[in-house]
Length: 400
Image (cartoon, rainbow, N blue to C red):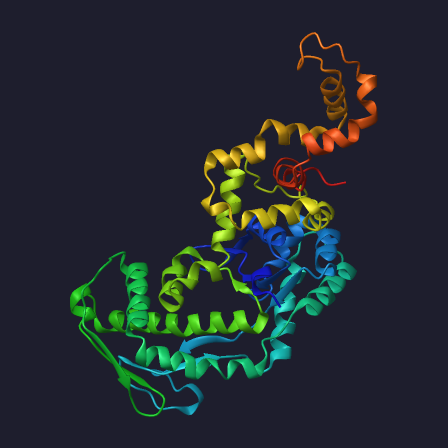
């Protein structure tokens, strides 16, 4: 399976207090167009009332039925428990850490409880809620238990032997918590009793914060390393690229070095946004009921979309001028319009020579026999230009 054709990522938009307030529909559509499969990392299925608001019941049902989306709905996440009596373990002082993966005791009940969020979908009848819940359950793909067993030894190896990665993760935690960068602090990590880690650091003095605050920053950094292990493990489990957020990429680069950019979806999505900007297309904040799932599903399978995806891979080395000519050039604009009413008029003007060949004496009728052949070869329809100028904007038109 080609991992570059599948993406795992988050589409929820969170508020400052980490509540889901919306869904990034523009990003979701972009990912559906660029990848064969999108594994949606869901937060307790809270995204689905928002998806209903944008797509409607039938649209969302159609999208799920197309099997283009898989859902990752897991409680499984890294945590730090050395200062608690988690699972009967003794408690430890600050700067001692026990890193565990925390999971729901009853997965079936967890999914059942998450599905209750679907009832918050606007305007759905009881039967529609039931049908939507069944479709969501069918799309949920649990993490294989065997895959998880690899993550513990991998994260432990990083914590003990990849000091650059650990410090980079702590630097990110410092920046997030205090907005300070390049803070010089001492740091050493060693194995403690059992499965704990002990840290020695002067971070509190350097940041002028108390021990509890410094302990929390180190904790966040260590969990970041474990979370990166999990992200890579899920890439393997789902055979998909990870849609890392911008703030997570520096840590990913430390882990994978020069492979980071090629293994992330960020480059392909950035290239897409660049082409759309150069084409001077308007932005599309999707209004309620303005996204056509039918068109989206049809367009992503079109020859134009495939041509566009193939071309997009190498567009990073192409100049803005070349992109503009490829998308908006005279030949491609003519090619785009061949199959439209205006295009038919353009075809007549070209073949008759009106306006293009002054005082032309060759009658249009004489060229009609080779009309299709000449136009297909001389003014070919560009799949790339068609995708950018026609197909992509049509997704956001009024739905029927």
